[in-house]
Length: 361
Image: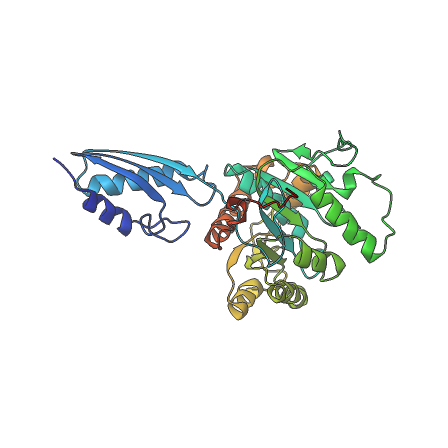
């Protein structure tokens, strides 16, 4: 019994990747298809990290090709993360392929918690991930990642990133005492952010997640104008007050040409730990309505749960503290969706062009 390459291609064309919603053939994920009689081998190269779903994708592809008439199928599933385009006139940072900014219009909506779990979710899927704490006045990532100590600087200029739960991390919190307030004016703060970003020796990152301070001030503007941001994630809670400010954050990124990857809604539902009663303390559906208004994606909703707070405060966020839990699953699903959205963006080809140097001859 034999199968033709056309039959194999037709089967792959009809098969939809549940994460990208695209078929494996036209998305060019299926490559190097070899057909020898009834035996088929192929490579499947995904544009997003897929450690948790690799076996599912492998089974899907092999079953579909078997159903087309093959006797045996060997699908080799891998992924490749590439650098994507950023704002015009802004150069990519060495050692960093993509930068994801996590922002909110106002404080207290769980943005830092979302940022660290998003970064850990991407790392759980097999990506190389960094975390930059851009909140100069209130750095929280050292506590959330359970990292203590000072970063090393072998050359006296550049900093080695700190490591926590597999993430490369940098924060002003590593350089100052916990009790010391940053009594700085705007220009000093933006300069500090640029130094933390550009003078950290990031090592081959697929994604650098930036935890922004709340609002639309100096730091956000610096980030939007001078930092090569691939896309932004907006964090909100369902109530109107938070949504008003979240909309402002979204509009700011739109104005400076940074794609919005989607919206995450925190504290969307409270489940009573005693009786199991569900109550939407902060209102309902606000994040989804906002997404509808602006034509952006609703990435996911997280419950108001004491464990998220306890685990993050103790330096072991939910994705690493309880990887099998429903909450960790939601964070990982958001992370995978963000990676897929980044993968859909235009690819940056600047690294492929040779740099031309003119010298006196």
